[in-house]
Length: 305
Image (cartoon, rainbow, N blue to C red; front, side):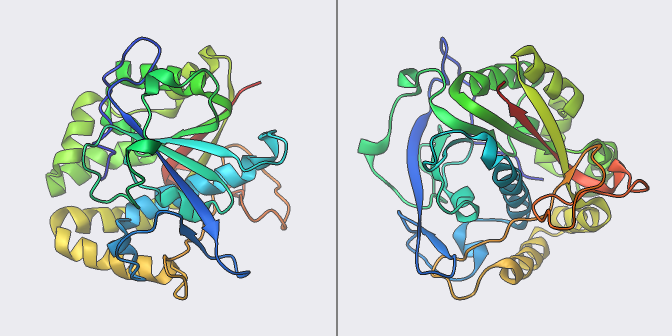
């Protein structure tokens, strides 16, 4: 199970020290809604696997994009393109889900081999120069299970400092955390072992930290657990077979006519909400008999009052 390993939390005073900022933007091409990165990858094949996006990352990025699109009315920036700071790997894959948004990525990777482009030194900046509330939105996806509890608290403090409106984080759901030891025993996956050894995040403690910073928050679930567990087990037992299956699944969700495949967002389920209208496509609400135990991942969207 992937974590954003290249985010190293070497904190300085009031900043994420030791990392670099890279700007990535999305621009439209044509009237059909496909979008490509302004700094395009050298290989523009329609295979999503060749675009450095695994199936797990697709699931987590696409669900987070659904939450961001749902929260768009709360981002009061005069109608301009929302600015997003993404902490973690130095690629612009999230931009493929958010046409018209302006994405910045912050990572300390010295050589981002899966980057969507190399904008050059002129677009890099020291995080020490980032003032409070520099971005409309700050997101950390696939990051929390890669750092310990002290690192998570410091990370969330920085996210709260840097955002004007919204912070978004994701993590394994409680149901997936419960199944974690069994998957680990079956697959002996090194990343899963590391995450378990430092302690997996939980939404209760993360929500408490955001409330401490003065934010309100909502939780969303996505990806059915009964479908995710067999894929996770296969990928752990046979990485080659897992990649082949992931490539097939990714090819099913990419728009085939786009030079860089446009990707669709996925439905997310707001925790505790009932009675969503049929027209509400970004968020689908489970019925009364649907348990949170049915989903593999949880997203928290924290809103500045």
